[in-house]
Image 1 (cartoon, rainbow, N blue to C red):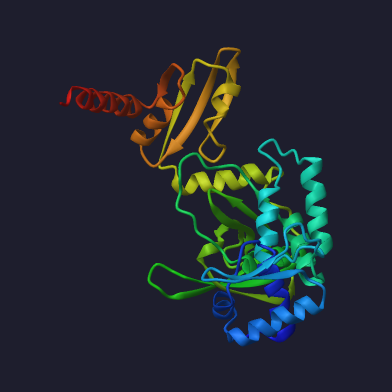
Image 2: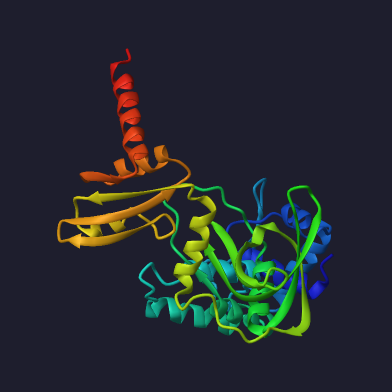
Length: 321
């Protein structure tokens, strides 16, 4: 249930989204009566907020166009969304505009949210890795903020998740960094029971519990953590691999190959070597046809077979009446 103060703040945030909001709609959203909503609107007007009442079947409450309002009220979910949208591009270069916008957002957040956003900014990353649509696995913003805060605190976490048989498994982790890539969130952490660094899918976590036990001072698994994350991901879904010479400049080919799926090495001004992997050779063959460049398969022979089968299938479709 909402208390009066938090409801008023959230109601103002709702009205800031523009449009007309009926009393019935707002009452349902805040789980109160329409009479309570009308009283809340009156309180906001008394505080100087220019809220109009629209009459009629499609009536409701609306802020005046061009109204001057105090700083926008961000929820944690909105703050995380802004952070994700303003991340540096694939070259790792953040624009001055993005940095300035993040600073302004952080300045208007309450202390608790500001602290969580600061932890997210420092201990989370977004890496390019999606070529084709992949099933997204949303994670609550509160959980992401908790993990980022744990990374900053330098204390161990106890994470609960379910194994393949549905049994609850607890792991003790020393969290270091969270990463968003391939439409998913991952946690890089030292897994104490296994005695090694691992990458964990955050959407698999059922619960986390912070402890007072400090992390042991140990080096990260790699100096290039972006590459380490991609290496861990590749090991999970690349069942086959291939080496291909593409008869085009490396910069032209890199546009099509995200780091999580393969690497592109310049061979000359007009050719490059592509090392790529996927679930099967047919998937690799389909990717190669998207390059819009000539290529030569160096290995394996199974990839040549997959390309021949695709060609036969395409020819059959072309002949079909």
